[in-house]
Length: 75
Image 1 (tube, one colour):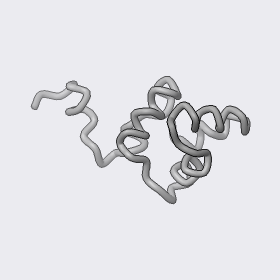
Image 2 (image 1 turned 120 degrees about the vertical axis):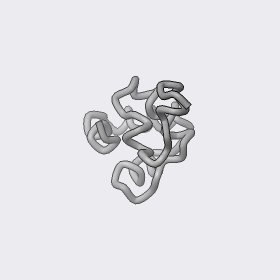
Image 3 (image 1 turned 180 degrees about the horizontal axis):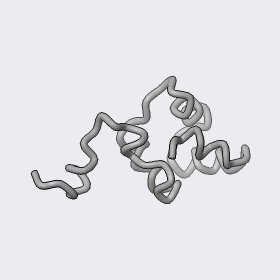
């Protein structure tokens, strides 16, 4: 699921709480959700964790070889 779609299911306070748990701002989340900015690798990991896998690292940063980092593909 995209971050934009996920955030549409949240109210303002829930978005603020998500941002806090991910150590970022609501403005930064909105910039990423609307495609104006790209999430850092660390933020992608935080978002996957805090959304319980609803928003994945692969969705946020398809340019990173997450399969290699997760150890799910032979080197």
